[in-house]
Amino acid sequence: MILDERTYSIEPAHVGTYLDLYVAKGMAIQAGHLGTLLGWFTQDIGAVNDVVHIWQYDDLADRQRRRAALEADPAWLTFRAKAAPYVQTMRSRILKPTWFSPLGGSGVRP
Image 1 (tube, rainbow, N blue to C red):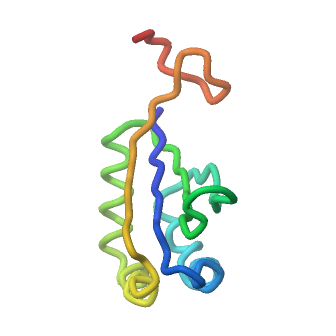
Image 2 (image 1 turned 90 degrees about the vertical axis):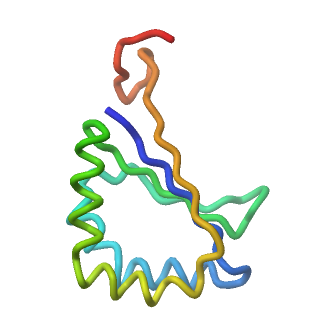
């Protein structure tokens, strides 16, 4: 299992607008392609205009297949064009749970 942590820095004062747009126009499309959403988060301290979401995949091949299908969906491309003016930057990290993680890890110790 891997986790895809994606952080978007949103234009200040537009975090609520971005999240409302995502819930109304993007969430169902994305969830239909990507599968297991672990959560969406905002930051309370630090970069308060960042939003973070974490998706779970079987492995990198599963992630690649699912993201390719999402990027080929015209409805997603339409949503992304509407959301783009609110996004300053995007960062992505791939996380692997440790062997003792409650999510269930690979069992391999570093």
